[in-house]
Every structure is written in structure tokens, then in C-alpha cells.
Amino acid sequence: MNNIEEYQNLVGLLKNALKFYANEDNYLFYNNKDAPVALDNGSQARFALKKIEEASEASDKMEADYVKNLTEAIENNNNTEDMLKIIEEFKNLGNADNNI
Picture 1 (cartoon, rainbow, N blue to C red):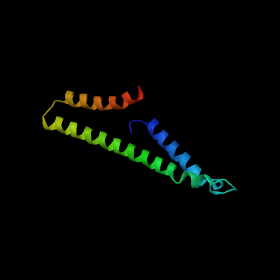
Picture 2: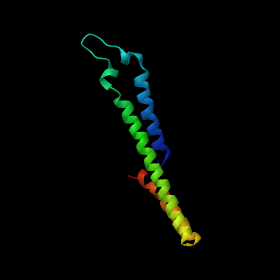
Picture 3: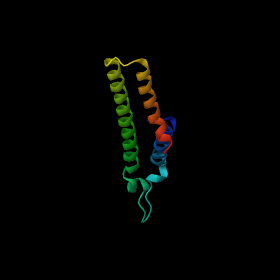
């Protein structure tokens, strides 16, 4: 994840899913009406878990790319200015997502 707002959105999604499953009324069946939990059949939980997995994979990929590029810069004896440029480019990747 690139910024605190993405973490807050993910936490909000998880909070809503937990509220749904924590609400005892969602487990009650009525005449001619199924319980919301039965209708949901775990879809909110699966969706939240998928978003966590996607965020984790994106973060891992960004970190791996960063380490790879920085390692290559060091191995190629790039000067400090080049390495700082690489660091700035990675910082800007996160900022670019916020400007969309």
C-alpha cells in the first residue's frame, strides 16, 4: 500500500464486514425471509480477505522492485545522486496514485 488513506480504506472495509457478522439480527430467520448471513454466504468476508491479499501482494512487489533497483544501482557503482534519484522515483509512485 502506498499511503495511510489506503490502509484506512482497508480497515473500514474490514470493520464493515465484522459489523455485519457481529450483528446477531443478521442470523435470524423469519417467515418467508432468509437470514442476511445465509444470503451473504460469506461473500463479505471473502471480498475483504481478497482485498487484504491484493494489498499485501502489491506492497511486496513494490518492495521487491525497490530492493532490486537499489541493489543494481549499488552493484553498478552508481553514484549517490543516481541512487537518490531511484529513491525519489519510488516515492513518486505512491504520490502518483493519489493524483489519479
